[in-house]
Image (cartoon, rainbow, N blue to C red; front, side, top):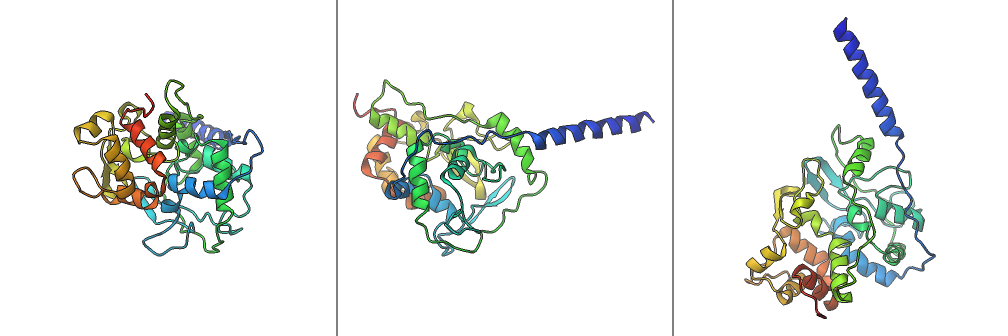
Length: 298
């Protein structure tokens, strides 16, 4: 009888906890501060910088632009980046600018559901209002594709999206970009790109058992990337130890070649192919200056 009472009590507590977690509201307020007119050309540039093309297009499989990316195998399941073309059903053609801003900066869908953090909204939370408006304007020019991307294969219990509310409460690192007033505009531009749209920390920082970044080892590399790949440390000490300079790093972001003449591995090679090679020289130099701890104007 005592065991039965304990079992019933456990179910009751669990049921109350489940109901409370499901009912826990999410803060979906990501409204832009002012009415902004987006520039699709600037947005296309930012889409490259943010990795949108590489993630949402199955380039090697011959997929149509932004119609859905290849599978990303993780410890929590296989995720497929969705169709973000202008199709009204399969894509995001019926999204408003506010819907888009909430998804990108808060990780919440127009239906109020949390996105899995494989979508790097934790970094995109630092995007400026203008960059969000520009991105939205760019995506509005994409041809619609009526075929939806494959559904992600996420096993229980990770398939229960309400559990993401706990994850967000513990690990959501939201906030606007924090510029350093003591540094130059160029250095701060590099910091913005690295910590925001480029989301370098997504690969170059190790993660804990919950899939959240270990901030105590920022930029110290990771051996647990999707597909059993790894990313090297990109701390200042590690970069200098491997003979990187600001000039060679900026060149590598364009060419994919290291100071020793080797080519970047597959994941970083794809980043260069789909993203950083499209950046202008000033932005690549700003990224390199930030990572190498140099300020071009000091």
